[in-house]
Length: 92
Image (cartoon, rainbow, N blue to C red):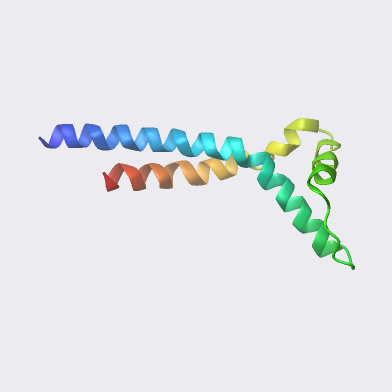
C-alpha cells in the first residue's frame, strides 16, 4: 500500500543522503587540492600550475595541517545531503 511506498521512499532518502555525505567526505581533499591548483594558476602571471603534491603540501602546511584538506566540507555536505535525499526519496 501507500504506507510501504512511503517507508520505501524514506529508506531511499536516508540511504541517498548518507551516500552523498560519504562521497563528499571522500572527495573533499581532491576538491580542495584542485581549487588551490586553479587559484595558483590564476594568480601566477605565467599560468604555471602547481603539481598535485605541491598543492597538497601547501594546504597541509597551513595552521590546521591535514584538516585543511577538509575545509568547506560542512557547507558542501549541508548543500548536498538534503537535495540528494529529496531527489531519491521522491524518485523511487
